[in-house]
Amino acid sequence: MKIGAKGIAASAIATILGGVVLLMALGSWQTESEKIPVKFSTGEFAGMANPGDIRGSYSFADVEKNFPVTADTLAAAFALDVSVKPAQDYLAKDLEALYGEVADGAGEVGTDSLKWFVSLFTGLPFTPAEDTYVPSTVVEVLRDSGKVVDADTLAQLEAKSVEPLVPGIVPDVVDTHVESTTERVIKGTTTYANVISWGVTQAEIETILGVPLKSKTDKIRDHLLANNLEFSVVKTQLQALVDASAP
Amino acid sequence: MIRKKTGTQRIRLAVQILFFVVVALVSVAHTLEEQGVTLPFVQGASLHAICPFGGVVTLYQLVTDGTYVQKIHESAVWLLGLVALTTLALGPVFCGWVCPFGSFQEWLGKLGKKIFKRRYNTFVPSAVDRVLRYLRYVVLIWVVVMTAVTATLVFSDYDPYYALFNFYTGEVAITGFVALALVMVLSLFVERPFCKYACPYGAVLGLGNLFRVFKLRRNSITCIDCKACDKACPMNITVGTASVVSDHQCISCLKCTSDTACPIPSTVEFNTHRLEDDTREVAK
Image 1: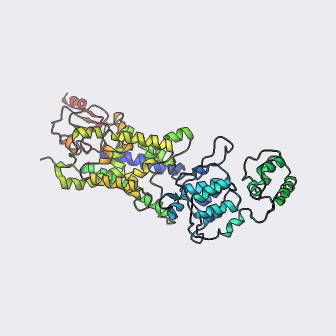
Image 2: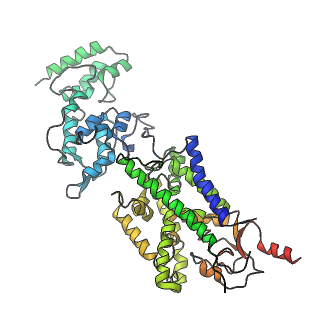
Image 3: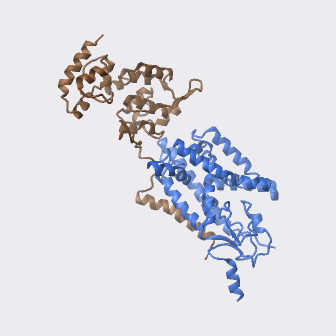
């Protein structure tokens, strides 16, 4: 059997374009990721979303959906102008476009910077590339929210920080999503990291809890509920320690 | 005088233009969508999402981890399957008829032909050319291994095809532009230089020439040894001495066939059986 130009043309068009149209009709033609990062498969973070898999095409809304960090916090951390577009609409790769190469070409603020921030904010593991930089507002947000209290980590961040796009104060919006650093009162949304940042040690917390503290970023109430512990009882004991360590 | 047969190549050109326009439209629509502009009737997608080679490089991760390499999506794997079907039936039809970058090189080559006339596509010494033809398998192995190791699209920064369709987006690495410029210049001297020497996907599809159902066959009984088929082949394959062309570089373009270059009817064509059998049958 012979095949000529018409046969080949028809075959190519029918198979490739026709195949695509058929797949579209069947709902199987997927040209974008579902914006769900892979999960850690082993270790203490098994089953949790991996910040290392955040992609350039992720919007801040996608990040918010997958990690316990709001789009407003992300916009504030990277000093993005939310009057240009809503925080939720910024894409991870916008950072590269807005900041790009920094420190005289020694590094870059981009998607990796976002991964690093999300990792530190949520307590999930991620190792940034050597040339990954962040705007100084990232350090402020992490420090002020109590998400990073470790001096070494803060020093490492500061060494890799550059001037933000809009120099100045972190927008107030951050305060609506994270604990106030001045009001040292344990509430339902307070995390262990907050308490540690107020001067209580992890060992002191574990003594009260009677169970090891796996994640500092856990909300105290949620963690206690998961461990069948009474929030009101523990809260009182922890608050006493917080008050005792007040400057 | 042999009348020039153009019908076959006009059909091929129409298919090439169709796919070139479709890919360009989808790519532009994707860029515009990211800026909040939607084109009517065109669904945007990144170039990575509609390149079947993405399906090749993500296979390892898909099998071992159940996920795709960054920027690669399900669509690329489906395209890999669809193109594999055409390849099993007809050989690398994708290269000769569909791939917009192959078409782009071919169209640039027409300018080269005007400049160098008969010398066009004969500049590379055959001894060197023979070795260079396997370079694309080295590229293929490098790309597949490095993509598996790093889980990122390592080839993207060197891919002239990506550079061609994304030159205006600011997402193309300088190495991509260098590769594109190099291919454009070389296309003026050599027909389809990227396809011949560097295309990793062409390397994969080229293997299809060993298995394709419709094979490019030459009828040794009716052949007059005029070498018109050899001269017409853009990939410099010697068709005139083979009974079946299974060269890994054939792109199924039909330029050598009796529908185009070969002056004798039914002497070089894509067929499922030996052409000599037909001749003997007629002789009886």
